[in-house]
Image (cartoon, rainbow, N blue to C red; front, side):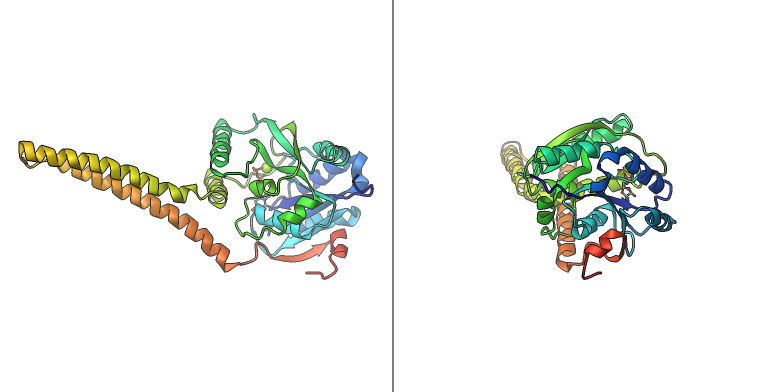
Length: 323
Ligand code: UDP
Ligand code: MG
């Protein structure tokens, strides 16, 4: 059913990862030995400022399945993966982290399910997240819950990252999604087709430091929600309507009270509370508008998601027009 000479590309974004690239390649060669003839490795250097590129170029001399796409500066992991989706030609791709937090041996299961069962997306499900802090676990659960409630028809499974095998047919559809704000987790889910999860335990990074912090994660979550839901925009008319209704009741009560009991000067507390409350509600709603307008302006400008400066290794030969 699948082409017997299939090629699966591991797409590996790297940003200042000199501590991990070599271990990664060695682990792939060791753990994926039964499938090596079908595997290629495509590193995307996301503008590293250390010697990551030199290390990869050195590895390329002895290992003919390693390609390298170099971006012209740091564009972020999502942009790096978009570059790979656009440029890689293989029958399936597997986005995988270089720090071995996505165990390469799982790719054997991915390939088996894709090849033998005909499933189009096989994703890794993090079953045991004890290597993450409890704050990170709770916030990530909360995010998946909120996202799936708000996003309408595009659902993302919880505890699933980018680590997955994606069939060519889906890659070709993903290439037509031209938005600049690339929340890959949900974009991967957008085309649909058959999918299946495989459980695994997510280990700690082998070496080096994570590039994420809570502020970045928060913004990443906002990007996802604003890109896949317009509920935050619409909710203000309902909040406004509700506050309007309450005000009407309160107004009627005050008019009646004044008519019956007269008007001894009072009400400063009420006044200040109402002003502050409504001020805050208005500022939040303007802020939300700003979030959408900011993203709209990014989309309208239509700048490319990434700029690739060079491709080396076997992939270079498959891109006839070059860069
Ligand atoms: N990464 C990247 N560009 C960036 C930040 C990270 O290409 O701006 C790569 C990084 O080299 C690694 C992967 O994305 O291969 C995941 O990064 P990290 O381990 O820091 O994230 P975490 O596993 O903590 O979510
Ligand atoms: Mg990591």
